[in-house]
Image (tube, rainbow, N blue to C red; front, side, top):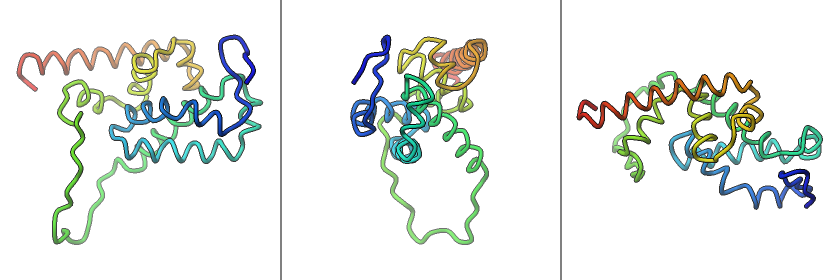
Length: 170
C-alpha cells in the first residue's frame, strides 16, 4: 500500500475488500435496514467494482468513496424498483417464519427506516461512518450544500419521530 495524503491507495482488490468489508456491511445494513439485503447490496457492488478495479483506481485516490457512492446509488435504484406492491395469486400454505432482527423495535432504527434513501445515506455516512460533509459529498456525487440540506431534513424528521416516541404518541 502507498499513502496518498490520509487515504491509502490500495493496489490489490482483495486487500481492499478485506480492509473495507466490515465498514461496507455496516453501511449497507444502515442503508437497507437488514443484514441480508446489506450483504446482497455489498456483494453486487463489489462484483461490479472488482471487474473494473483498475479504472476505479484511475478515477481517484479513494476507491472507498466510489464504492460507497455505488452502494447508495444501487440502494436507491433497488428501492425505486421494488417499492411497488408485489401481489401474489395465492397465499402460501404456511406462513414464513422470519428471523427476528434485534433492532426491529428500536425507535431510532424505525425512524431511520422511514427516511428517504438519500437522507438515510447522508445520516449513515455522517454519524455511523464519521465522514465530513466534503467526504460525503464526494461519496454520493453531490454538492456539500446538498449534503447539508439532506442532513438537516433528516435530523428534523428524526427529532420529530423520536419526540413523538418519547411522548408516547408513537
